[in-house]
Image 1 (tube, rainbow, N blue to C red):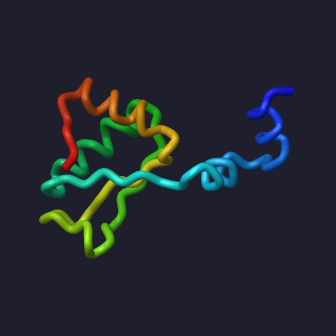
Image 2 (image 1 turned 90 degrees about the horizontal axis):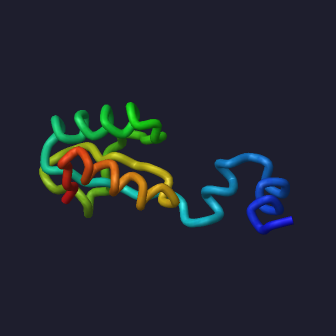
Length: 88
């Protein structure tokens, strides 16, 4: 059995597996309209994202950030580049 098979069998729930490997990443943008656009792009591409308020130390003019499973960072980054979107 490979390691992923063992981990999925052990944890049974993908959320527990995802949290055990690093948690979540955060995308920060200049304004709210960019956040809404990116949320639509990522959701339509099949990614599970959340829109939340950023921690105070990360506020850059917009009161929203996009949060996603950090394991998906390479795919999310690729999707954003493909759509001409660059986060702060």
